[in-house]
Image 1 (spheres, helix red, strand yellow):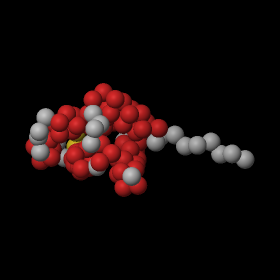
Image 2: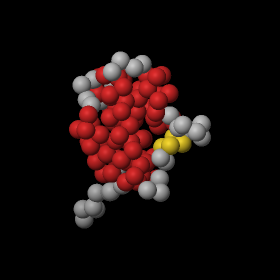
Image 3: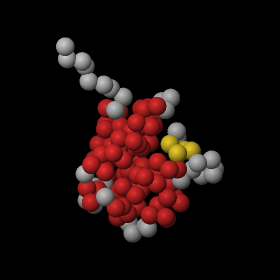
Image 4: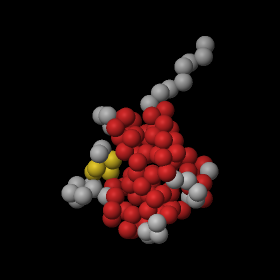
Length: 109
């Protein structure tokens, strides 16, 4: 559970540093959904990555690098917390979690 939170936090932290965090978070959410669909259809992780990686070989797609795509695929395929996750619900949850990282709690004085 802690490992999953650390991976997700690093993915989301990177997204917030991007110029358009909302667009990047949308893309991250859809990447989680696509990885779950690929897993459920029987694709292996390498096939999923080959389908999702940057098409022009730049290593960057929609503001997200191929390393982040690999982390998402590995998380969806190998993290037990994602074993039954998928669909629009997963995409929406990851999008909202990503966006929340741009806010900080108010100081309590």
